[in-house]
Image (cartoon, rainbow, N blue to C red; front, side, top):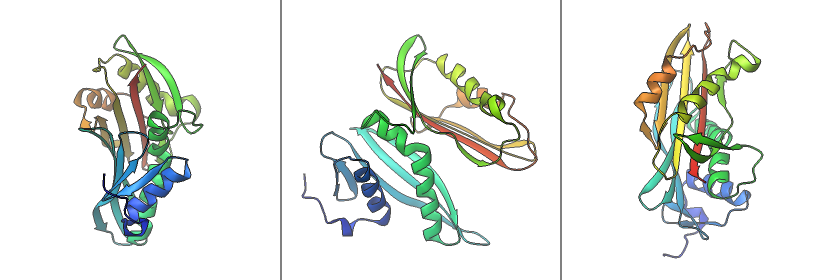
Length: 224
């Protein structure tokens, strides 16, 4: 392995990622374009892969990659908006921290984490350990209480009915609605579109709203 480069040579996105892991007690170091973890065969990096100018301000797409084992890389993508590119990147980084970072931290580094829920589920007849992140929300759901999370219960039921290969998996669900119509419904399994689950989730009775709202949840599934 090459000697770690000075932190000052890192991209801003990788410097952010390195500091984030170190602040949570993870032994991490920069090597080339990656953040490596000395006590495990994993590495990570982050990059802005798309930038779009808006009428006012900018928007970006930030991709965070975690190579959990050789040949298998978890990718989480986040939109960020702001008055400038820097503000938009900061917004995307914030979204990563509150939606996915603690899931990754608990699943692969430090299981004790109050920011996530860890449960044993029977998925396809096999016991699995599931690490679930906070529900990311933009806008405001038109319902409260149990009705506001009914969609997640239906997602859980459908996921438990699937059969998954005996290895680590990661799943992301995103749904957005505007003027009482869906504008996005996406389910990814191991970075790839999961058509069956997407169709099932698109068909449930989502709360209807005239104004925009979106929900997002990310989870990691591991063998027990």
